[in-house]
Amino acid sequence: MFKYQHINQNLLGSVVLLLVSVFLLTGFFITDITSLNKGLGIDGMWYNKIISEENYKIDDYHLFKSLPSHLIKTFFDILNIDISHKRILIYFKFFNLICLFSCLLFFNKISKKHLHDRYNLLAILSLLTFIVLKVSNYDVVTPDYFGFLLATIFMYYYLCRKYSFLIVILILSFFTNPIVFLIGMIILIFSNTLPKVIDIKFSSKFSLFFSLLFGFIIFTWSIYMIIPMYKAHVELTLWIIPDTLNIKVFPFSAIVVSAFCAYFSFYLFQYSIPFVNFSNILRLKFKWIILFIIFLAGKSFLISYNNHPINLDDIGHLVYVWPLYFCMKPLTGVSEHIHSLGILIVFALILWKDIVSESSKLFGIGGLIILGLFVLFIIKPEARHALPFVPIISFLVVKVISQNFLEFKNILFVLFLNILFSKIYYPLHIASFSGNPQEFPAQHYFMFFGFSCNYTMYTFQALVSVFIFLFYNKIIFQK
Image (cartoon, rainbow, N blue to C red; front, side, top):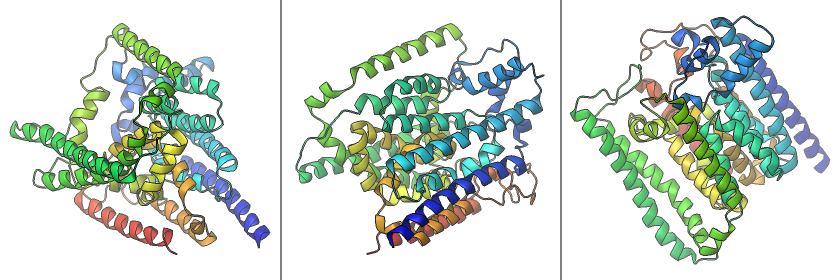
């Protein structure tokens, strides 16, 4: 019996790798590049100019996301390829494909080395998703997928304790995706911290207080940002998207999001309190703190030297725009993440307590900080921005999921549902790009929806999400 199961596991692991490879290649050849902004998608115009315009002065914000564009530009220069708009789109698409195939190889390495007998579930959860299989071939002019690769490589080398490679990854991510860099530094700085034994009742009381306080802060933040803008008759979205905040829906949505944050922060505070002791200050990796300070000083110098500010930087985006996004519809960000990142998010929410516990064991207080950031990111309905969290979240999900769940039929169903969630039918020419994406059929536009999703699509997604959540909650915890 054991040999039969072992053969099945090896066989299914190979099938998973083959399936993901086939889907990546198929998507590459049949998925159209968006017609939005002449193929540049949501924010590809800045990265396009780096390649196409000589001596282009990039702004301070996009400077630290510009490495993939410089790599493609260097490739053009070395091979003496004439630069054209079409070639930039094609090479970015090909660059994304290379990044995702590389992710597949590293996920396979992680599965074999650290997740034995798990049917390569890590690859199923991480790569068979809407974001990876569709948006990577649709909204192509973006650094997000190179950042995804760097986050995956960081996870692999960190788990293998090969710290010298991590410095290279940090440097590359510093100019690709600031979130990847931040996650890496948090893990490294706090990796040596250890919890102290504390009475669970004492921890729970404080955790309840701090989680309720956190939820109240989220609610206050949304009120403080939105009400003054509404009274001043300011447009409640900064992007050219035909969807504005419904001020009547806003109060309910703000309350629901605040309750969500309060609940999921409870376990984070519960497991964080034992780490609050003086001995952990001495356990911090000060060499990584010094390196972090050097990076921040270098960033300040580059910004002062570059001297091309932008109206909305990282902090401004967080403070001013985030509440507009997560208050548009109740938990629209969570719904968007489930339908863009697949069953991974459902599993993460169901197994949250176990994930928090495992993360504290593997990464110390740093793992809990990262999970706290993840909670903030999934209430924001742009799932591609959460890609840097996918390697660590999917690893933790596979690590804590019950062995009883790992039956052949359950894994096959996860495989099927993740493929279905990836919307494999989207490349079909059922509808063309619409001048009003809020009206059906604007199928190609909804390959990247999020905050622009209309109420019909949002309601449908929310109902599907609830059904999937209840279904998996039952089979995961069945006796």
